Image (tube, rainbow, N blue to C red; front, side):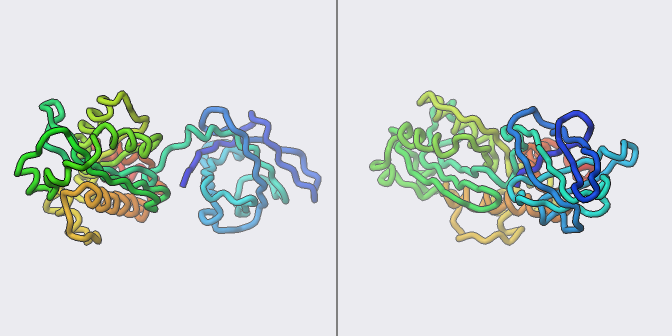
Length: 310
């Protein structure tokens, strides 16, 4: 779901006409984004369920009569939209909107991300530790559409502790492709996507280190499901992934500390938190909003959420 905020005024050449009453043309709409692609949609003033139709209208009483704030959902924007009788314009049989928007500047949504998890030989790439498995799921509009899983050979034997902790043995890694080969493929998988991990600082360190070895990077930003959960699920006894899965009754196969399995349950946890925010009245939480939540002091989270519902 992609929302853009529009403010009506008298500047941009958008025309409103009423053929039946031969009313004069009105204007206009200014997108609160940079000027870019032009889209034209037809709108008829009939009472309807605006949310289902993809449009939400609010009005600032202190502003001029013709300055409502309009939110348009372009992911499900029908060819013909309908508006309620209360829409603050004279009765119109047809309204043509030329919406000037730059699609690249739309706020990325929290439910369209890549959720990833690394298994590694240790805690720090700065100490010579390497990744030995990467698992990830790609989510678009709240649905898992793709996944990535691959063991990778770090070039040296892993400790018996890591074998026991992850279940990944040296025999399994002996025939695995190199880290460089796997990470080259993974860089393509995450291209252009925002990223989620549980305890993201750990996974980000290894992602950065492994991609730096092959002179690759990524354009997306990171958010941490652990930090978000600490603020949105404050009554949980622990915010470790396994404990949160049990506390929220998230479906799982009981496998932890394997990359794809951990990425899958992290994705379920993430989408659950997004869904609960939506149920509380926060429409289409953005990725940036979730980052803000993760950085907000626990005692001020309720204030942030209340403000976001206004």
